[in-house]
Image (tube, rainbow, N blue to C red; front, top):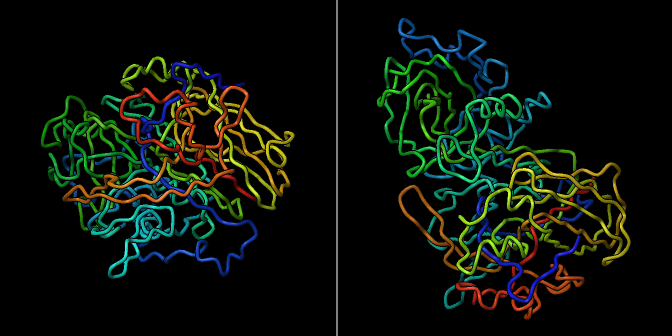
Amino acid sequence: MKVNLSKKAACVLALANLIAVIGTAGCSAGQEKETDPRFIGTPETTEAPPSDVNELLAGGDKDYYIPFQDPDHSFCLIGEGLGTPVRQQGMGGCYCYAAVTSMQSSYLKEHGELIDINPVDIINRIYEMPEKTDGEEPRYPEEKFYVPSVQPLDLGGDIARVTGALCADPLNGYLVSEANIFGSYNAPGTTSVTEDDIKGYIREYGAICLAVNYKKDCKYINGYYTQNYQNNAEDRDHVAAIVGWDDDFPSDCFKTPATRNGAWLVQNSFGDFWGNCGFYWVSYDMPIPDFYNCSVTKEYTSAVSYGRFPMATVYSPDVMDKLGEEMDLSNITMDDITKGGDVAVATVYEQKGSVGAVGFWTNAPGQPYTVEILDGEFGRVLTSASGSFEHSGYHTVKFDKPVSVKKFTVVVRTAGLAVFEGGPADNVKVYTIFQKAYAHYEAKSQPGRSFIQTGEEWVDVTDPSLKSRLGLDDIPDYETIVTPGDPCITVLFI
């Protein structure tokens, strides 16, 4: 499986269609958990998780409606003993608080344990104020976002940034194992999901995250706090988590009456004095553009990743031809990606240990992949795995047997496109609750570490001729590209 590049134009670097951020980092195998601060998080101070649905909804008018009375047409994780703490986020960070709710819910469902992860620790791994002294330029010692004038806790983000913060540096021993991007509901998007799909995801994974506008079209009606905002697909500013549903929730219990009965029970991060003890109801009618989840594992002792945050993509020649010189993403479909030619990327590591899994991003449901671990620098194949994932997002591929390594190469081939961290960037858009701000991203690719396959040859991503060799010279708006950075690959050690 080779990437055969034409002279005209073969691959292109662009913002990923489903995931759009940047970063890199890693940690060494065998470090002591007791002394490494990356294993130790700030203890949580939230209240105990809710355990009684009726207590949460005590303010509702029971003569009007009592939710969750019909088990054939309703479901709630709290009623199943899978409640997670209701947090109070402050000015920003909703994306991180919702992701932690998803992590805790999925781990509790699978292992019966409510894990301790503080969203503030994750936010501080993503954003930081730059080091600066009088008369000197700002210093950026780590590969992350640097914000000169905004507090990190005020900033927004997405699941890609959360995953980047936890894919390689354990927090309380936990690493991200999976971040499924499910798609959009009643809204435009590359992948559409149905009401039944969402219900199935909640049953399978636990709480799942959704994008909403937290203040539009909300109202207390008969004691229930509800929302049915019909412009939510274009006008959302917040992330929360769905924890249940009731098909019979009344259609007239919304400021904008719904066309049918049914609503999602959403857990928010504004504290338990907001809404119905921190929860509220979202109509089945409301369009929701983003659904995803996040799962963590404690199976691995350490990990390393030189390209944690996905910023850039390299397309295969056939997909590139469909995009055209204007790079119009509307010209391609998910099917174009899954049936596209392979894009092969590789990273060389010098680290002793036993590799148990490799993590990477995919951009389309069912996108085929092949992962290989090679001895030394592009030596013999030690182990391999192939397949596809039901959903796009970040995934870990666990090998049947751990592989002992010292110096080794990881090769990942994915159909249609591959995901990279991108190069250093100024003026990266970040958002607070009130304004758009800008951050500097520091990426530190090194020669001899990461490669893209062109024909039969592996080309270093720092090679000055890479842009020409990838056929990008005549592509508008890409004249400043020097390197795609390291591919977003995580190696997990047991």
